[in-house]
Image (cartoon, rainbow, N blue to C red):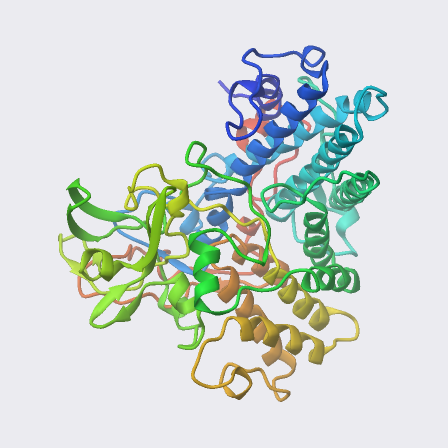
Length: 553
């Protein structure tokens, strides 16, 4: 029996207090109706906490990495049973692993709607303190931001790429701005969808600004949406809409506010400990509330009876980085030794966090086990190869030292480094390109990712004035890949650039390791392939006849 996703999400939203955030204020224990769940100020904060929990789920795990798994950057191992149809571009409207992304984003939207539909009753209350009024405005701002964020993530996946000349005539998304279990909206135009996203961002900023009108301000936290998130999303979305000057303006604000992680130690802290100066927003996780493991990229074949008696049988991820991806990084690029395993003293090794929330240390795999981090083969042996290690697990998210089984990291929804790439791309794509400004942004990002014996400006990594035109565009595109691999940007970037791809050259092994079936390692996708635009979930189109399916599904 088909289930109508939007209706199912609405019904679950009313029961939200049953399963939301433990580290924040606890929810009531009973399923509540709309009227019953909005009686007091505490009810409003409970619903806010619920929205934060849904955002955390929506941002992490497969919601972040599926698009990169589909792209040219990774190869699937023979032992993997994950996302084969997506990786080989053989998925259909009835068999697609991205359906959950549609449902997750509409969960965010409907919880935001639930808040916006009810929060008004507290805005002018005379019984609230200034701090409580500021909190109410913060809740309202967050709801508007969350709605814009969810729609922005969906529009790039389920709609054709935005072109200003045709957007009014292209299909957008079903716009849902009220809470109703019976609504069956049709798809708005792409232009209307984008206008809706911009309007929600404007409302969000208005209410974040209102928070500042009170003396007792809410302390900004990277673990919750804030005004800088609005600025960062505006920059990202304006780039998508070809509003290049506006994208540059918003991105420059981020650039001037946040400093980049610099050098290997700060990069390791950023990716292992989930801390650093360039994080704008990463939803909070705790040992009691974990969301979205990255075991698809990093898992171990271990036989262990206790922590002091572990037999290593090989690395066992579902996907391995292509050789072409690894070769994009120079030896002086610190991302090479943070994002991937690397050779050291005769071993393949990588950096990880060993320990728990009570105490931990950063060390390398060979220091931990005294063996090489080689890859398991189907024959039971191991072979030398490169593993993707951007998500090795934050030790402060563990109660027990099960480093080999819990590689949870807090997914970074916005990082300052994106602003540099938006500045570079927008300057190259605007009506009157500014190549000097693009080179400056790219060089500043690279300089912070460089660690060598020479000065960056005297190294081969430096982008000189002689790099112009198409060559500079290619440098910019490759830098997007170097910086954001594994974070879900690659497919969206290719679609925005109207580029197809040929899967990059694979790592070579003597024994079978990778799927070699035609359409896996040798996959080629044209820029006009219909699967760049994902299918609307089949159960949605069957239950809501007003929703038109995308072409080809």
